[in-house]
Each structure stands twice: as structure tokens, then as C-alpha cells.
Length: 291
Length: 287
Image (cartoon, rainbow over all chains, first blue to last red; front, side, top):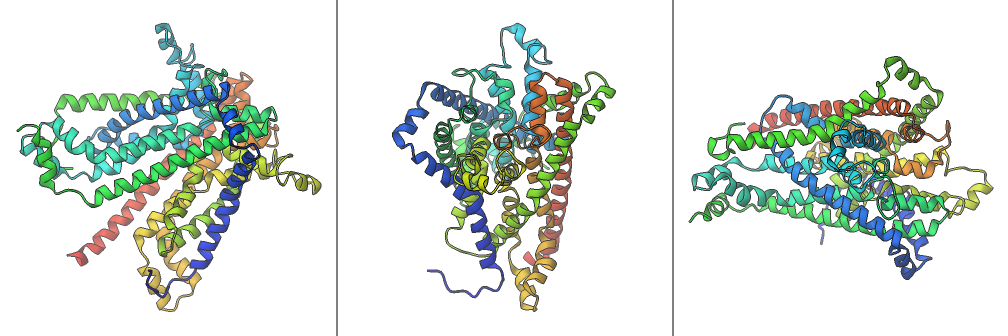
């Protein structure tokens, strides 16, 4: 058990007490109240609402678009993080700062701007639509908005991890005869994979709940391009408070599970970093394919 | 950064990666940013300025600032208190507490708004009592402030916790054992140490407070001139096919985003400089 140490620093009781009270009043009790409200319905009815035709379609669109956007960002985010850490090019500092734009730009602004860009007469839409691809006011528009909104997550989770990779390992692998691709796929990629997965999960979880940017570009057709957060709002506007609550509780449960998953991933990443295998082993693994 | 040729991609791979990465950022970040201002100025500067002078746009700007200022002290006090308890002391359930502090990041803004409708709305838990006492929270400014508090809850605490953990507690312990009172220790030792981290958290939470859309939209009731923040006003103008007005209002928010990015970069630079300084001061001791 904990050794009874004398606390030198003051304010522990006050700081922790205030933290717990404020957290409970603002976050935990309101969320708990919502779960309580949903329990008036009972599990069967909640599932009935969540699995209704319109809700199910909304969940499918929300999940599909979020997965796709997170996957696109995992791929391009890896490239962007790599060039920002390893390469030098003019304006790099500016580009690095710009990556955070989606965090700083209000979602409504992103929404109307992307809708205008990809509309039939927009800067991008007028080149894309003649090719037979419609983006604005279709489910593809949702994906585009979610790519924008979640762009920083993968880049920002990967950057510090790529910075921490020790060049010696790569050089050792090369000396042992590994090609650059082998070094990447056997040494670098495994060591940044947990961070990549964390960034992906963070992007996915943010995308699931996103509302402001999506509604302007989605077209919002029920069954086709309606996302769950919008369905919650339209239920609310039709005074179907219980229906909105049921959907919200399902979303909350999913978000909470994702949050736990992300925490476990981060713990995994931290642990991997602590007990790195010896340099020679990693380097030899990369070169191993040759022999 | 020095690197041998062996640990580098072939030249054509480097160029390909640069092209793909920067091209992606150009289409998904730079182009939208330019488009906001291009659309706002599409019919010339005078019409742009005219759109900004509209009284409803002005009152929306005012309310946005009021809400941001109202949430700031709450977020600072909570952030410092939570970081103090978590970074400087050991107790059971600490990692659960950190997870719970992150919770608002994971909750959809729409759900965040709905939660307060269920509490304070007409049919909500406290609804009847509130209407008996003639207090309006939902579809009024107090509700919008509460929803914004929920959304911006984690920002400052999340910046301060790792910073204060890294700084350790020796300096504060020295101050206390030399006879400083709790307040003196905080003001003379802790606050100077965390000021840049605190400012960083304030910048981030402020950007979110001013830009929040979903949560505020649910509880606002969209009453023109009364419960319209700038992001909500952008939506109304856009849905009325007033593109110039919508993008003029949006351009103010985009400027705010640029100021945020700039301030954030400056603070990051200051923080890095301070840790570098600390490292060079400490380096001889280590060897």
C-alpha cells in the first residue's frame, strides 16, 4: 500500500475537491441525467429507435463517411507528418502551422466554404462535375467535410513519434543491407504504427460527432445523406425528445468506448517507447529478409 | 539535421512524397482558406464592408465575444485546479479522472446541447421550477454559455497537466519550506512556470468557444439579434442565399482562426525556447 508520506505542498484537498465538484456538475450529472432519461424507454425501445430504417441509414452514413475520412487522413497524414519532420522545403514553418487550421476554423465556416468550392459552379466542382462525379450535396460531400475537420489528428499524433525515431537504427539497417523500403516497412512503420492507429481513432471519433461542417455540404436527404447528429436535431425539432435521447445515448456509448480504446492505444504507445528492443535486433530484423 | 545517404529515400521518392503531401494540404487546407476571403470580397470591398455593418452581424459579434469572455474564468480556474491536483499529487483513480476530463472531446456537440435541453428545457428536469421562477436558460444566453463551458471544458487542463508533471514539484516544495504561504508559492513560483502553457490553453479554448456551432445551435433557439453568435449567423445568412453576407461574417471567423494559429505558433516558440534554456542550464549537472 501507499507509504504514508507527508504532503509538503498545500491545496491538494481544495484543488481535487473543486475539480471533482465542477466535473460532476458540468459533465457527469448532465450526461448521467440523459442516460436516466433514456432508461424511461427501456433497452428494447431504445434499440427499436436506433435500428429503425431512418436511424440505421443515418448510422451507416455517419460510420461509413467517418471511417473513410479517417482512412484517407491516415494515409495522407503519414506522408504529411513524414515530410514535415524529415524533409526541408521553403515555407515549411508556415505549412506546419497551417495544419492546425481545422482546429482553429469554426466548423460552420468550413462547411459553407467546402460546399461552395465543390458545388457545380465552384472552383473545384466545375472541374469535377463534368467528369460525372458529384461531391457537394451527396454522401461524398460528407467525406470531404470530415477529411477537412479531422486532418490534424493523424499528423499531430505522428509528428513527435517520427521525431523520436533514432536515425542510428535506420543507418544500422541500411549498413546491414536492408533497402530503404525494407527499413521503412520493418523498422520505421512498426514503431510508428501505434501512433498511427491512435491518430486514426481520434480522427474517427471526432468525425462521428461532427455536425457543423457536414450539414452545409451533405444535402441532408433522409436515408441517403443524413448523419446521426442531424437526425437527433430533427427529432428534437419535432418534439420527439425521447427519440433524440435514445439516439444520443447510443452515440454517447460509442464515443465512450472509442475514448477508452484511444486511451489504451496511448498507453500501448508509451509502453513500446519505454522498452525499445536493442538497436541491433531491430536493424537485423530489417535486413533479415535478405538472408 | 544530419543524416547519412543510406538512411534516406531516393530522390524521386522524396519529390513524390513532397508533391503528394503538399498537394493534399493545398486542396484541403489552403484552397478553402483562400476561398473564404475570395467569396467575401467577390463583389468588391465596399459591399463587403457594407455587409459587416449590418446590425445583426454586429450583435452576433458582440454575443460571441460575451460568451467567450464568460467561459474564460471558469476554464482557467478549473484547468489550474485540475492540473495542480493531478500533476503534483498521487492519488487513486487518477487515470480515470484524466479520462473523464477528456470526455467532452469525445461527445458530439449535438449531444452536448441535448443534455442541457433535457435538464433545463420546458419539459426538462428543472423546466417547471425555472419557468415558475421566470428564469430562462434554454433558448437564451445562459444556456449558450453552459453549452460552451461543456465543450471547452478539457482544453486548459489538458495543456497544463503534462507541463506541470514535467516541471515536478521541487521548486514549489522549496518555496513552502522557506516559509512561503500557499498563495505566495502559487503566484511567485507556479504561475511564472506555467504562464505560457496557460496562455496556450486559453488560446485554444477561446478559438473553440468563439467558433462552436453544434452545441450552441441546439440550445440557442436561433432568435435573431438575441441568441445569434457569429457562427450561427453565418448559417442563417447562408440559408437565405445571402452568400456575400455569410462569407463576410465567415471571413471574420477565418481571421480569428489565423490570429489563433499565429498566437499559438508564437507561444509554442516561447515555450520551446524556455525548455531549451532550462536544458542548457541543467546539462552540466547531468554529466
